[in-house]
Image 1 (cartoon, helix red, strand yellow):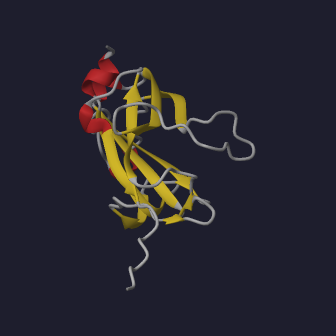
Image 2 (spheres, helix red, strand yellow):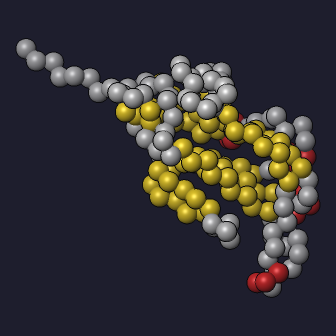
Image 3 (cartoon, one colour):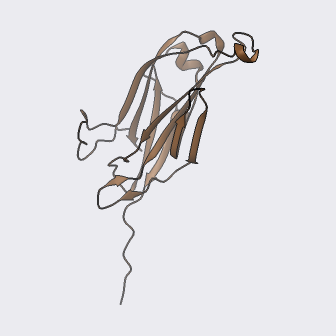
Amino acid sequence: MSEVYDRASLSLSLADYAVTDQLGKLHVVGGGLQVLHRDHGSGMTSAFALIVAMTFSPDLFQEQYAFEVVLEEANGAPVRLDHVPAGATSDLIRFAQNMTVEEPNLAPWGAPRRAMPAHTQIVVYFNTGLPLPAGRPLLWRARIDGESKEIWTLPFFVPGPQPTPVIG
């Protein structure tokens, strides 16, 4: 297990919409989602954003790490899509990137070097939704250097169609 993995602080959340600006500020609309609604005709969820916030202590500046987020079933198995969207190369929903713990540049505000931790926010916005299975809990799992912690997961639910009324 790597030192970056061991000492990282990480949280995940879902929102209707999120974006980071050029100053690194996070802007969120409709944050804290636990249920992603689905168009049962198309099989697609509504648009949503996955937000991953990570904090690292100053002694980790310039350390490199592999970051990954994967969509899983409640039992830990990766979710496999029934049909792969056009342009996709896999039936898994996974985002991965090699990253570096960057030192924040707070000198313009008078903060001394290495006085503040590094804070990174990653927003993955699914503007057309995803073709997720309905009726069972799913979860996003984050990993650093191939390892995850239970607190680095975010469970959510995609409801199935509403039952029709019984008449008679």
